[in-house]
Image (cartoon, rainbow, N blue to C red; front, side, top):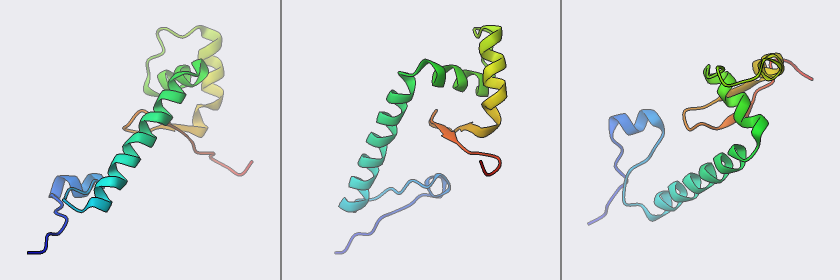
Length: 93
């Protein structure tokens, strides 16, 4: 009997594959490890943590100077669903 990777409808929307294929399982583990390492590295940088807070609207604990500085660069950054910060320039620099 041959087994195939099975994808549920909700998982298909999120881009996550579910199944017994060893290669897809290894890819998933590696991807999760990379995401966690990137998140950990970003969380160690205070300016990145501050910018993330600014972008998600948690500005009550930011000093006025910090909020002003983050406001001037925020248009070039995004935070994804996994709490990772991405640089997305709005124009060619």
